[in-house]
Image 1 (tube, rainbow, N blue to C red):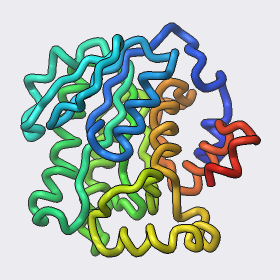
Image 2 (image 1 turned 180 degrees about the vertical axis):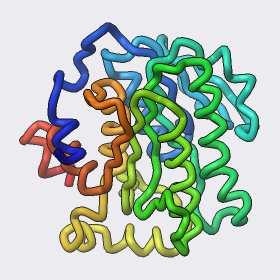
Image 3 (image 1 turned 90 degrees about the vertical axis):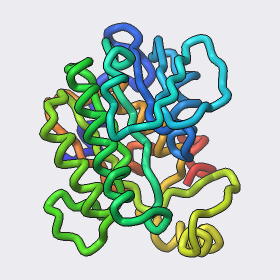
Image 4 (image 1 turned 120 degrees about the vertical axis):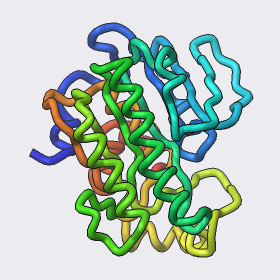
Amino acid sequence: MTATDKLATGAPVNVPTAGQKRVVIVGASGMVGGYALRYALDNAAIERLTSIGRKKLGISHPKLKEVVHQNFVDCSSLANVLLNQDAAVYCLGTYTGSVSDAELRTITAGYTIEFARVLRNSSPNASFSFLSGNGADPTGRSRLAFARYKGEAERALLAAGFPHVYLFRPAYIYPVQPRKEPNFSYRLIRAVYPVFRLLFPNQVVRADDLARAMVDVVLRETQEQQGLILENRDIRAMVKLQTPPRDRAVRR
């Protein structure tokens, strides 16, 4: 059974099967995290949403609790905030080349592992949805630093003891809304995106679709007590399953 098959079984998405859930989103000031936040706020399956990040979002909503936390090297002070949570959607990260190699490892792996440690102690039954990346290598053998550090984070999450861990490995994430691209390669792909999407459909995913999938998976969960790796092809298939036929053409 593939990852998509596992997600295709069970109760319909957005219909709570055991009451509404309490969800934490980390990194909601980023592109994917921002879409995850907006989708979660509108989702009736979520009772309470806690946003944890390094800067204020400037958003007010009856079910939103916002926590500003600057030092993710030590998340101990978040222990009470993370009590009685049902799930976490973790989107905090940075781009390769924007920081030094040491900082890249700290942000990509160190922050993730430390946050997971505190969440596991406070809410041991929480599900964890993690924004990893295409090519993530848990063996640590990849020549790409980003792949090694994402793989390091994945390995730690799978060993942490959470009942459900979902590792999302998107390839190129299409921003949807115009933005200042982080580097030349992103500017280039954005410029040729219509052609790139047609030639390599399983190497692209919309940011809003990815965010929705990351939230939906922790609301719905799979039956297996395990980690589930979702490559770009799996993410697209999951989105297709959840998108009404009339809307699929405009969301490719």
